[in-house]
Image 1: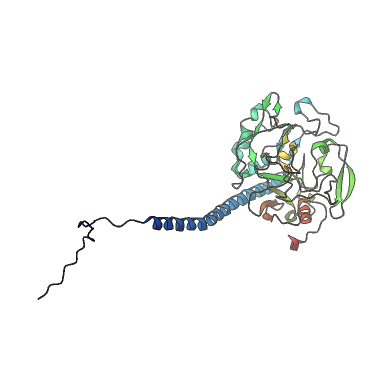
Image 2: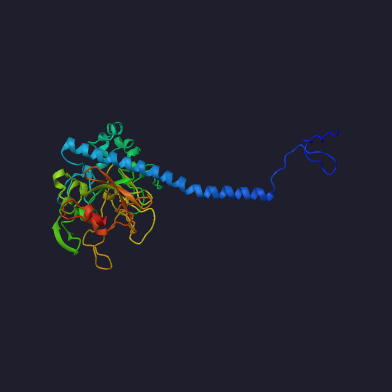
Amino acid sequence: MNTPPTEDRRGPESPAGCRSNHPRGFTLIELLVAISIIGVMVSLLLPAVQASREAARRMSCSNNLRQVGLATQNYHSAFRQFPPGYVSHPTTNGSAPTVVHMDPLTWDAGPGWGWGSALLPFAEGNSVFESLRMEQPVWSPDNADAISSTIPMFLCPSTTGGDEPFVVLNESGDPLMVHGREITLGRSHYVASHGQESCWGECGSAATGEVFTNIYTGQTKIVAINGDAGQVADGPFFRNSKTKFRDVLDGLSSTIFFGEHSSALSEKTWVGVVPGAFTHPQFSSPENGPDAAATLTLVHAGPSGGELDITGNPIIHPINFPTYHVGQMYSQHPGGGYVVMGDGSVQFITNFIDLLIWAELSSMRENEVIDWDRL
């Protein structure tokens, strides 16, 4: 009887008659193919991962701005008015006590506290607020530590320009020295809306100024200012503003109160304004240059001061508009940025918003009727 051969499980015999107990490895070609496949898979997954991360950052930014909006509503409930854009010693002729450190160019003066510092008690910022000496100016040595605090609510995680405190600069771009000291302020990626018009720089100290009365026809008129920025500003926040619900004639849900301004463009603060300071752009563009101290906390939408573009139309710069001016809103979210309306709601505004709609949303009392179908 024939017996079937027993299977040899020791592996094939080598040419020398030896059997190998080691598994066969990858060839170079197989290894390169595997690496290529892994590379393709990573390249396909990376955009999805990045999109997921940006979605999380957008949600965090939106939540921060909701806190700002809610704090603003609570502030109004407590004081029957919204917080001021920033507080400055009032004057109609540029005269003021030496102690308030008035800037002769802009008439900005102490104490300088801005809308962000005013909101701290209404946004779980009591610990920082209680360390501020509000009866003293922003730049007082007693406030040095507190005003350099980092407040997470005022920081957008999509911003690449930095979260750390910054040193306030003068017009030349050098550290501004007040009583022989540099001033370091906590950073904010959010700003308050001055409306269409801006009244800072020379406007803040002017007797009269030119303002637009009709953004559709470019009609303007001369108004008396005499140090009162409220004669020019048509938004809710300006120097010594005391805006109330009843002042927002265009409707709270139709008026922008706050928005984004990435520190990749320029440095902003939650603290307030230091007289003599200037905000400087972080990169160059044709319309980009330093601007007065008010832009540490405020921006505007345009048009302003009777300025016209090369076509003769009023200049309007919505969020991310390529003028990239330190006095406009600027976001690093893809496709647009967030704003807070007067009713506390948060809206995402695309980069392609109609210019006139942006101007309409930025004013609070111009009696403009917004066509929401064009938004």
